[in-house]
Length: 322
Ligand SMILES: [Mn+2]
Picture 1: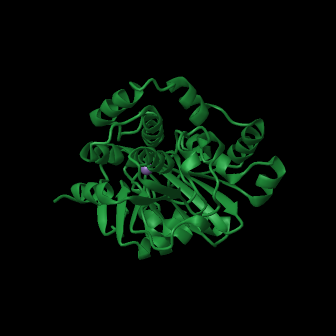
Picture 2 (picture 1 turned 45 degrees about the horizontal axis):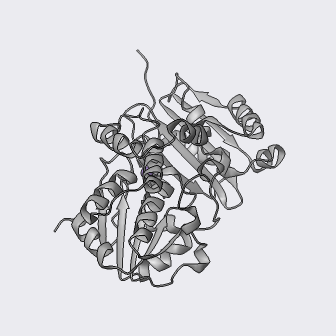
Picture 3 (picture 1 turned 90 degrees about the vertical axis):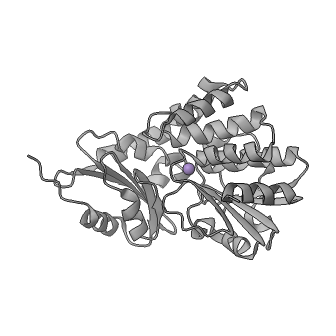
């Protein structure tokens, strides 16, 4: 039996499912989890869905159907019979829900992070899948659970987020086939796009302007980096969840192969890395205890911003220009 078949069997037989995705969930983490949550509830299963504190959703994801099925991590079962994690590359990214994951009888891991270490009892991990939502769609096929419009909207969100709106090189024919299938449920594509990518509060725009203004470029490494301090968040009145797309502005720098945004949080700094060259930024992130993909990765650290940036720079190749 394949891992996908084992996952489908475990999920099909379970009267109750405990679902979880990674901390500070993105569109794919939320979309893949909520998509399955909606359909499992439709099948008459008892569903709990959560992610670690802070139990918040970035404003651009608040439209997602199924959020009403989510509950706080403190209300999560301590030892679920069958638990399923989505888009979560390591057990550490489950935060306080890691304990439930360790105590679960069956832990199904649904993911596409190349850095995933297979912490489940059943591991459905496909690093070639463009999104965890793609893996969820394959699972639904085996389960023979029909899609509905709400679940399609969730999976579409995962797909469009993790392919950078069908622009990254993970945008395969399978991605377009799935997009076609999902959009056929009458999804409001323009509305979803604007909500996800095309609107921000002016306060965020001003914070982003300040971050771009202070960006530093290292020509020897073709590396561009900027940072947002705790003071910036205060001054502009912006929450960290709103700044998820900041790295997508910085990575447009045409001189740079690798880009980075460092954000100060009360628990330390949060680092996002992107690459447009063949350099694998997930290796840098793993070196700091994080993870991700070749071209998009991240980690957290308790070191100060300047120190973290210096350490990243040390790990980047010096590019010799002809
Ligand atoms: Mn993902």
